[in-house]
Image (cartoon, rainbow, N blue to C red; front, side, top):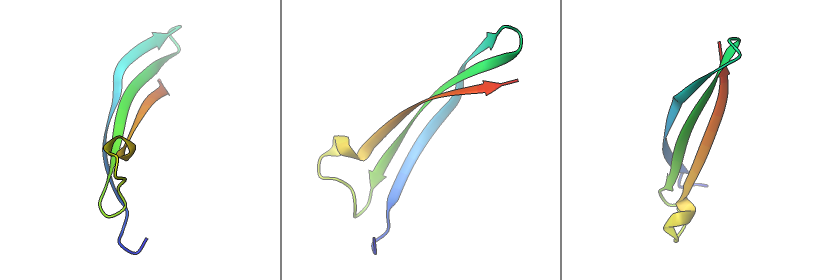
Length: 58
């Protein structure tokens, strides 16, 4: 990895906030990352990663 590994992304947290029994909230979000630079893959779909997030908030 002498040339450096580059990755950029965007995450949207707390898109949906659902109360759960008046004790806490369930938070939902989505995000994605893209690999670029000298170590990117030839097939573009291999350079993307997506994520679904679930969290708890008070």
